[in-house]
Length: 97
Image (tube, rainbow, N blue to C red):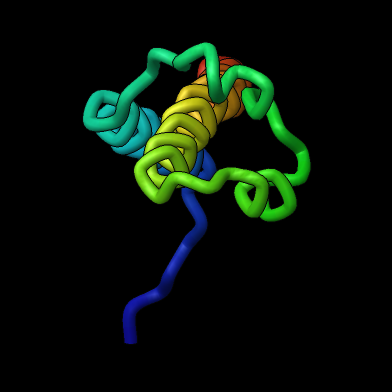
């Protein structure tokens, strides 16, 4: 029987690695989506009620574009959040290494 011991340095490094993978994923997602907001859809930028707002858009092409723009903005926000958490994990890793 193998004894499993917890290695806090390895665990923290895995955490940092996962944040880096998430950042790469969100960066890839953002790169595939439009980011330029047309004037006609700017009123929906930063919406907190996306399901309510999308119902106000009549053109299916605009619905798709709006969904993509929101997804792009969400990916950009996720990159920042993952970077914040990664930097905290890196600081902890540096302190315990």
